[in-house]
Amino acid sequence: MEHDIAVLAGADAEFGRAAGRGLGALIATELAVGGALVIAPHQVLATVGAPDPSAVTVAVARVLGVRLLGQAAAAAWRPRRDTLIVLAGVDSLHAASMVALLVVDRGVRRPALASALTATAMGGAALLLARSRS
Image (cartoon, rainbow, N blue to C red; front, side, top):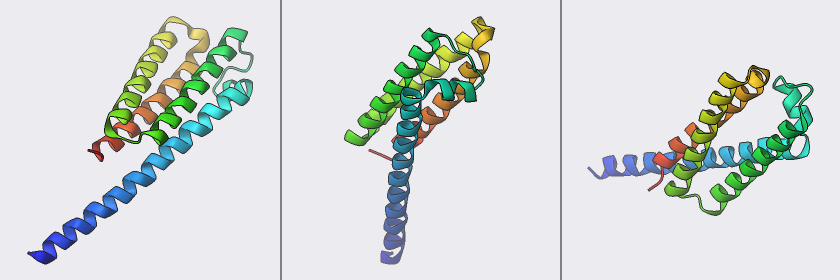
C-alpha cells in the first residue's frame, strides 16, 4: 500500500512539473506572438496572407499584440486556475470574432483564419493547464 501511494505521489509531482513547463510554453508563445505583432505587424500580416495591410489592420494587429502581452503578464503574475480560465475565455471570444470577420470580409480571410486558429490553440492550452491547477 505504501508503495502504491509513493508511486501515485511521484506521478502527481511529474504531472505538476509538466504543467509548469506547459505554462512556461504558453507564456513564451504569447510573448513571442504579441511582441512580433507590436514590433513588426507588417511582417506578421504578410506572413499570414495580408501583404499590403491597411493602416486600420496594422493598428488592430498592434492592439492584439498588446493584448497577448497582457495575457502573458497575467499568466505569469497569477498562474492560477481562474486566471487561465479567463484567458481561455478571452481567446475563445477572439477566435469567434475572427470567424465572424472571415465570413463577412473575404479580403481578410487568411489573416482572420490564422488569428482564429492561433487563439483557439492558445485558449485550448490555457484550458488544459487550468485543469491541472486547483
